[in-house]
Length: 306
Length: 274
Image (cartoon, rainbow over all chains, first blue to last red):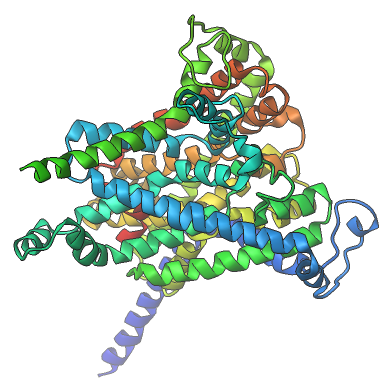
């Protein structure tokens, strides 16, 4: 009797120390990642929430003594016509280049490439992927040259008897949108190719036997089956496009005037050109909140088991 | 019969047109880089020269910027792989209470655009007295690459069977030795995938070093090529194209290389595999 009562607590003690060991080991293994993430990832996010409510500046007295100014930055922001322009420009850029451009073009490419000649499929795939692998800054150079007054596009236009267009001045937003579509489409294409490969052939065949034509099969059968991939891809592409800075900065610098001034460019100009770090951070906070919202939707859409 | 034929041909025609539209802007870089008098418009070089490339390499400042770019990207890739493997181990092997919330936080972080935090990061670097520091830049880039890397590593590690490790423990190996000698070697494809993605990401990154580094002597290739574009881009097209070609090559080569490890195909950056 008495031995029993001694043994069972002994076992639990032993189990407990083993558990503690596991926990200690886990913490040690995770520590470097935690420290780095805390300082350089969580830190800046918290600082965004703090600085957005200060008058922090790169120069002058405000650079030394940071003051808490409440919602002043946001009041300035909502009265700033430049901010409103930037929000509209960002939405146009997102809608045209990410939601419509990359997604639709990526989907068309994936559908058309399905069950085509293998070599042909490969060549087209490599060409589209080349735009994706190319670093953003080189993408900008390629398109500045392509769309310039004496560039390739105008040369082609002149050869078929059309007048040349000053693309970067007359249609700056269209120019950056096309460049971003060119750079990003491969991602959507790869996602949709993987999704389409998962649609069982038997389902499509059954629909065809029942008398459905190509478009009916595509819109009524295939599209609903890859709906999940479309939603996830849409959020990921939106998040990627929301953060696009380099491409626009190198191509137009946000101009001419404010015609391509998206939120990241506006944020950069306020913080590092006008030296208003506090105001710049308030703009980043808007970007961050949109990003956090989209990321949360992304997580919900993934439905992962951990 | 005829209708069947057009239905077969139309996709090829559309794809060919799209292919041509996609390749035209790239062909310019290729042709202009070998052309002694390159212009803005695409044209076959009348004569063929390597002079654009030799003049890019003749400038020690350019060589240095490639060296610095390599230092930042390799440094970041090595750190990310090491820290992510260590973090992935307990997440893959032990039942931890905080595993679920932590993994969800990691997944959340993979989607956040870092552009949004660059202004406060700049301020943080001033506080930490790390502005203009290459090491500081590497550490920040490492942290920004970690969420994705931890997520991938954990999934790769889940597929390494526990039995192999257990037999190593019976032979007297410690947990650390088991990870190093048994688990890590079996994860080489996964490690290479993460390393290549990390490297390419920072090699092509212009915004982060542009904000965090101020001394021109410390600029990596991505910033130097932008400056070159700013001062000579509108005159010396051949050299700009050659510079772009050299700068793009590592990304292209590594991408081709990474395809070897990704035979299973592409499904939303591995995240959807859960």
